[in-house]
Length: 342
Image (cartoon, rainbow, N blue to C red; front, side, top):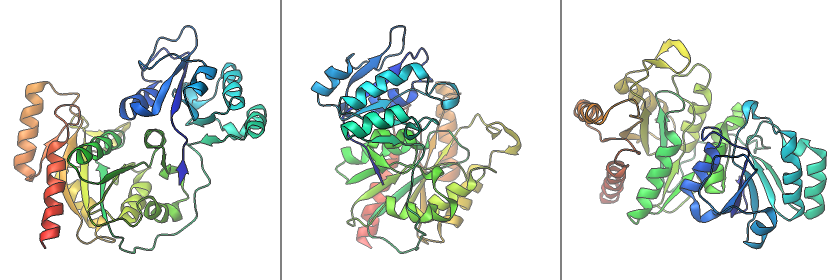
């Protein structure tokens, strides 16, 4: 598994849009103690609120890595960034990138890193282990976030839920399967970059044996209902062997994002399909709740929607932004107590 050296110096370059800087903003929000500061060029208007530091100041403050926190158009690394990255590597910082451009393909940067003995981490890419899934039941407990579509809150829900469980005194670990999640947690695997035959095996390694009361909260990817990304969702589902599922949903979508020919599934149908697929490696898998991205709804409409879905499905319905995920954490705690009683 990929392991990153914290704390970070967040590189914002010349960012002028929070959308392009969502990686840096996400890291600063979810692991603020792991960030020593930010480095911005003149003209940048986006900030994480962390102290502005030079490379030398960040090294003196104990930084372990410079993390590229923005995604320019096309995911390519602008040439005018390169002197700063070389300076950081020469000063002893690892470089962490989620761009399409491979750091390992830039000779000047590779030479600077080799001379300083530091690492270049291309998080989007990776030489992941080629190990097939075994289906072996592993001790410990696992929860996987799944979705009716892509890009509707699976990572955010998993992060919020891991934090909520920890606040309750439950041993819980967020397991990252995407590049931003890896940067937040400091480790994980970009599951969509793994060769298809080995997705389940790598997912098993991502959530290894643990003690009976420990929960791995695993970041989901894709959707079983997406014609392009159902494969990665299924492999992750089988390999993670979840005891619990949380279904993520955006009620404003009548069809899959950018795919008008594919309707968004009904929640009850989506739950049953995920449970049916999950039973291959864990016959006891259960759906314990729904996480909703309700940004398209006003407060009254959201409350009415939540109450209706809870009544229809008999499951807690939350929006991690509006009110948090305490109802889901309570459902997990109840499930754990029930298992112990049995």
